[in-house]
Length: 149
Image 1 (cartoon, helix red, strand yellow):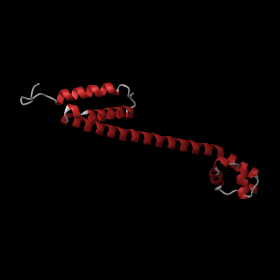
Image 2: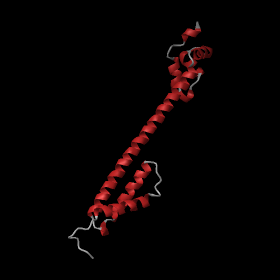
Image 3: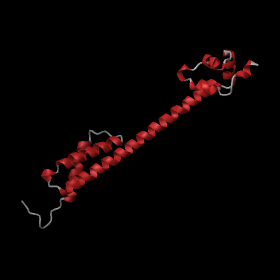
Image 4: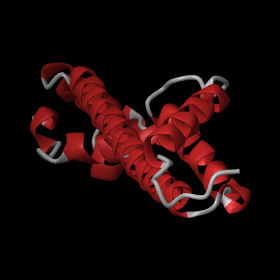
């Protein structure tokens, strides 16, 4: 019977053809009639199996993309926080006249953190100013031996 001439791995071959997939190509490969391939394809649900494999592949790809984005955002948050910490340390120790690089670093850190958290960055300048003012008020406290103007 011609139906049994098609080997059990015919579906895998069919699947491996990708965009060039056809029952005719399978028939040529295994030297059987196209009708034989068609009967097997219907009985073994080749089209449904292809659709299911492609759906699973899409889902896996989407999941990897999501995980990659989450990892990138987490990495960017760590970098932004490190920049902010270094900038705040510099603001504490540098005189006001030489602290502008620290201010720029703090601004970059805040913008990057906002971006990684999905927040708009246009408010970042206001946020940087408030952080700087708050830190100056907190760390630049006058002591008895501080000269007065």
